[in-house]
Image (cartoon, rainbow, N blue to C red):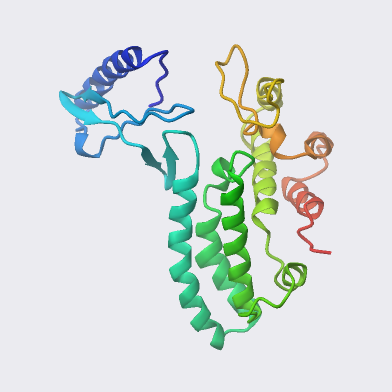
Length: 269
């Protein structure tokens, strides 16, 4: 559940009242609420350092600074530092293992294994967190691990080969490329696979940058404004080019994705 409140007292009251209804419904359906696994996070732009206690099913549940939802770590300050660090901590040991396997694999075999074992972790859920809201130092870390993976593939352990040469040899999307591709694929799903065009139009109309601080992501009430850097349209400077492809009924979704990859230089030419 996601519950909003103007202050902590309103937030507690609404959360506890809604939880009572929710728990009662689950019990009537023969299910049990495991309060030991119940987490509460207070999302606030500047963070919420004071720990609060909420009453859930007559049990006191204390707030935490992070919450894992489908493998993605959400922080109370709406940043992604802990999630990125968690991802990198999972990738590094596997990279060490693949470095040993590289002795018995050719480049194409290595890249297939690396894609399955490393990039599947590195870019998991990227449409949510790998975008303009990510801090610069986290982008640097993501790019660094990306090229570490590929340098093992071409056996460039002393880092003498240029990144451009590595890209052409390995043909794997950089974090920046994949971020834009993931956002573009999301637009395709919204407009063509799952929902009508008016949903896409609504997203584009309601998500806009705050005029006073166009380079900063800001969170607003629905009636006043929306997320700045996290705005779907702001993730891709070529969104206007994507529009005609989406509107053309003769272009299949897979073809749009190929066009999108070429636009993002996935061909590395």
